[in-house]
Length: 99
Image (cartoon, rainbow, N blue to C red; front, side):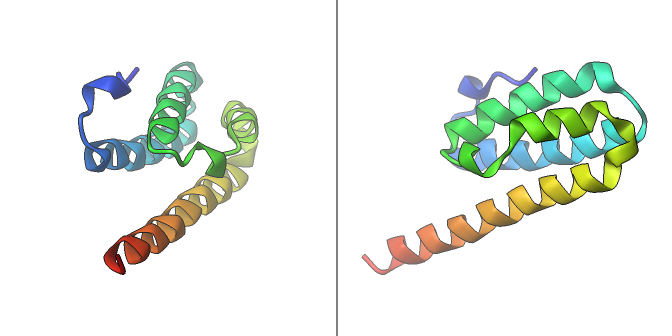
């Protein structure tokens, strides 16, 4: 499990969040469900630390992670969450640049 408090910058947290998202997909493809729960927990903590937790449906992601037959749905849901985060990040950066 990742200790989010040890990551000092938002950039480091966001980078780790992306890496863990990819890890979750690989773990699911190779049926490593035991470690998926730890990865999901770390993703949740990092997302909350970055104030983007509202873009993840953790209940659905956990359910899909544990049911390997829905890999396409898991990938879609995860990608959709990351796209929403990217969109809000661009909007926030544009707003900050206008100040």
